[in-house]
Image (cartoon, rainbow, N blue to C red; front, top):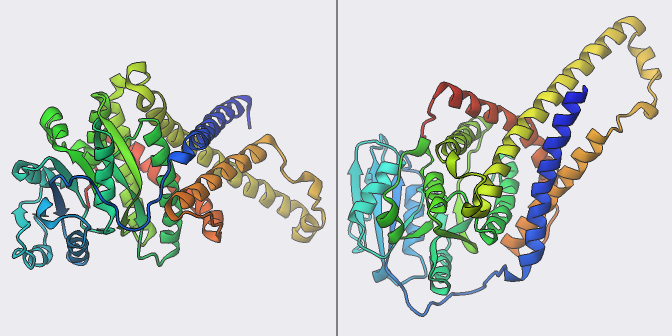
Length: 412
C-alpha cells in the first residue's frame, strides 16, 4: 500500500473498531436492563390498535401472516386489522377476502402505488390510539404485540416501539448467512435504543402512537424506504423510539443471492438518500446520538466496506498477476519448492482486520444471547461475514451508482 492508502485504511478501520467498541461498552453498561420474558405478558390496560397489512403479490405468505395476527395474546375487540392489497396481480386479494367475515378485519383494494400509499390508506381509516404495520411475509409471535405495548405503558414519552426480527424458513446457505446478520441486528437495535438513536422502524410490526402521524404527517415514499424516513422524521422532532428485544416477529428472507442483492440495494439506496434529505440535522448536538453516532457510523460502514473491498480486489489481482509472471520464469514446481512461511503476510492490515472481525463475531454472539438467552458459536458465524464481505460491496456500490444517476429501486 502507498502512504495515502495506508492512511485511509487506518482511519476507516479505526472508526469501524470505535463503533464496535462503543456498542460493546453500551451493552456492558445496560446489560441488566435487557429482559427476556417467558410466558404470557399482561398489561394494566389494553389500548386499541390498528394493524395494517400492506401486500403486493404475497398470496403464498399473507394467509400465515393473518393467522398469526388472529392468534395474538391481545383482546380481539381491541385489535383492528386492515388488509390492504396494493394492486396485486396474483391471488393475494382472493386470500384476503377469505377473512372478510371476521368482525375486526377489513379488506381494502387499491391500484399499485407502493407500500407508503398502502399504509396511508390504512391511516385514513384508523380511529385507534395506536397504529402498527405488519409486512405480509412476516409472522407475529403470539406475545409480540402485548410486549410491544408494555413499553408504552411503562413510559408515556415513548412514541414508537420496534420488535426483534427473527428469520424463519432457513434453507439455503445465503439464508443461513442472513440469520447471523439478523441476530446481530437485534443486538445493534437494542444498543441504539439505549442510546435513543434508532434510525428505522421496520415493517414487521413496528407500533406507533397515532399522535406521530397527527403531528408529523403520513408516510412518505422516501425512496421506497418509508420505514426509515418516518424514523428520521421522528428523530428530527425528538420523538422517542424504543426496541423490544423479546417481542419476536418472524420474517421470510431472500433465498438467493440475486433476490438478496435487490433487497439490499433498496435498503442501502434508502439509507443514502434519506441521509441526504435530512443532512441538515447531522453532527448537531441537539439531535443526540442519532445525529452524532448512528448515521455517521452507517456512512463510515459503507465507505469502509467499499474501500477495503476495492483494495483487497486490487491486491488479489496483483498477487495473481505477479505470480503468473514468476511461474512463467521459474516454473510451477520451482515456485512451490521455494515457498517460505517467513514471508506470510503479517502486516498490521492483517491483525487489525482479524481484530475487527472478532468484534463483529462477538456482536453476533451477543445478538444470539439477547434473542435466545444463551450463547452459541456455530460455523454460520465463522463463514457468514466472509460471504457478506464478498457480496455486500456489490450492492453498496450499486446503491451509490443508483444514487448518482437518480435510479430509484422498486419496492418488489
